[in-house]
Length: 513
Figure 1 (cartoon, helix red, strand yellow):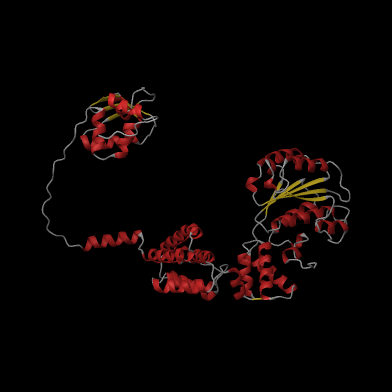
Figure 2: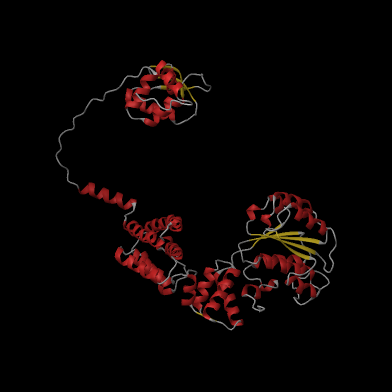
């Protein structure tokens, strides 16, 4: 059977500049350019999915070729032969090309060869290249010259969600427009209008959830609305949308975070079990908890950013958040945010998300209880002041014993005995000792570590009781390092040489004394 149903995202696709929602700057610029005759030869539209890139390209193509006027118009009629054909994607002179399936240089050459011929039924031959970032390097290079100086009857309109992947040489030849995410309030008005046109009951709570879940994308929001209508039969309420999205309502999230921050582990885990058993998606729950933490931070009194009218919470819920903020510190909110951010990949990689989430809640509650560093310092100072002085025996001052280092080998042994493994390893493996006297070392550092000499000088001063002059050479002296010298000595031993001959490709890795 023929399916006559058209999804909302296609049925209510913008057909003119006036119906293009959420892109006021773009609309103003393009309409002014058309009205003043300042029409560019190439445009590029970029933005997230569902903000109107392809729709804007079609509207612009209609504006350039509408038959209701003898020149380009910013108000295409939408009823003439050209407008109807362009809206249906069937106009012979307006070609929509999917760059994802036409990536090669041969495809681009076909387009450029066809661009040389004048349009058949329109004023302009318009090429709309969608997802242009998918073109190959060769295809981009083939497009460059024509894009810069196309025939007078050709307009290029490029669209992409990945503007960073488009070469700068292409961007410099186009007028760029960044399509913004559509605000939640704008989406809500649009969805409410569509629900009215479709004679659908859409509650304010459900509309709010759909608009926020759309994340700035009109198409995503309409797809969700379509799904919600199909699920409920035309009576879309908050509960049905929450069930469809597997999300927890804002009130539940606020109460859950209040329980978590109260310190009652048993109550928090029981509440989590209840939310989980009601079918909540734990990934979405974590996102909701992060959203709560963000808004609680924005509403914290000391930040003086308490205007939270754009938050997803009701007035009563915002009052609850303010009361929670009176009992916790801004430092606590910052710490639990960091823990939740770190838990996102853990939750995605976990084989059992519920177990992972249980442990996350326990971790959050312990971190919330931890005092901040300033509080710990204050507490420590208070304890020191309150502590009564006690009679203590006079400490026995031991005379510090210094060691004597006369050769490079002495220094290596001293470092090893003092368990200064990092200094020893670097010294024995990377330094060519050109001269070594008491208090003076002349050396070449193969790795040129500027901090090593400082660390070694401090250690020598502490152990020998005198200042050492470490003179660094700029060129290699072709001397063996301590490690290389030790290997040379050991391999010169006849017994070791015989052992090495017995095993093919054997090498000495380390020498221990």
